[in-house]
Amino acid sequence: MGTESKDFGYQQESESPTKKRKIQANTDEMAAPEQFEGFMIHDTKNWTKFSKEKFTPKTFEDYDVDIENECCGVCGSDVHTITGGWGELATAPICVGHEIIGKVLRVGSQVKEFKAGDRVGVGAQVQSCMKCPQCKSNNENYCPNMVDTYGAPYNVGGGNPSKDAGGPMKDKNGKQIFAQGGYSSHSRVHEQFVFKIPDNITSHEAGPMMCAGLTVYSPLKRANTGPGKKVAILGIGGLGHFAVIWARAMGAEVWALSHSPSKEAEAKKLGAHHFVSTKDKDWFKPLAFTFDFILNAADMTNEFNLQDYMSTLAVNGEFHNVGLPDKPLPQMMAQDFAGNGCKIAGSHIGSKKEAMEMLKLASEKDLHPMIETIDISEEGCSKAVQKVKDNDVRYRVTLTGFHKAFGTGKN
Ligand SMILES: NC(=O)c1ccc[n+]([C@@H]2O[C@H](COP(=O)([O-])OP(=O)(O)OC[C@H]3O[C@@H](n4cnc5c(N)ncnc54)[C@H](OP(=O)(O)O)[C@@H]3O)[C@@H](O)[C@H]2O)c1
Ligand SMILES: [Zn+2]
Ligand SMILES: [Zn+2]
Image (cartoon, rainbow, N blue to C red; front, side, top):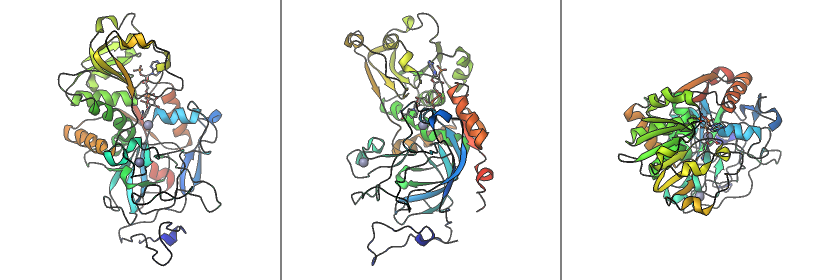
């Protein structure tokens, strides 16, 4: 079935009427519906009350890829968002989810990398300006004009590398269009933020790599994790368990630091050489001056005695936050950094270059996360986010059964 822009009633905003270019029609391509459908949250007080509703996606533009979603991981960030931990909802109702795997239905006229039928993934970002120094240096995950996968407003032509973006993108009722996430039937994403999935990685394992996997791969890679390096992974949840897997595969000596002693056997199975329970009194004392790098994937850093953690760093070692708690970090004295010349840092997801490296590593070394699956439904979404909130996941939930829930998967 061929598709054309008229199916959507959208104007290709960058084209003059006389030179109006049609979206490339390919006989293998299939139309996505005019409206997508997702499991949405209306307000942060009812953060487990999902309802299945339709929403208007962004206008289909030249660099966009339409995807029929197959499954989606459940990230700690989804829970921070719907509980209001990071502030009120940017738009309501909101559909969260940014660990999406699906099948390409059709591509915009400028898309080079994908064709209908490709199995692809999408993480926590769906657009950037493609023009700024960050976008031009494999740091598009730090673009000041990035669009997050959910809750971020779109501008017209926002991802066009050769033109400035226009004003706010509006629906036919004049309402600002916001990005909506992957607990949904379909996704529409700029090709830069679509990742081809190697054949030997299953969809329910690939999903959580899109955010959790990439968010820890990027800082580990940038810290030159490898043989001879001593790396601690703090907080063995969705992100942390990937960090253990990657750091081990990169050749480092790996410590899992956890406030859940029951995770020891699994942490070692994932690849940790050592396990430290941070509940033990004075756990940090024998580890003074040990780690080159601590990757903090824990959610509650505001409750930590950070000085204890910093004291385990080797000279000039780094305490690197990827966990983004609801509350500020504990106060520290400048003196706390003086004893070992340590530093504190952070990062935001990763670049496409890093995503492709990560997928290659997982594919070539046959690396597997530990995943629980729950079929998507109003109850399924509710159960999944509650489990994340309760630290009751080993170690990531992937929502599955999308085709049944949305009546898709027929092509
Ligand atoms: N920077 C980024 O770009 C980025 C991207 C994605 C997610 N994030 C953030 O990363 C964090 C982790 O996400 P996730 O999906 O991995 O969440 P998760 O699966 O819930 O894991 C969080 C881990 O934090 C630890 N933790 C929880 N409560 C704690 C407490 N009271 N005291 C100490 N540790 C506690 C637990 O590990 P132990 O039981 O082993 O202690 C838990 O498994 C979240 O803040 C999320 O928003 C950031
Ligand atoms: Zn995430
Ligand atoms: Zn940019």
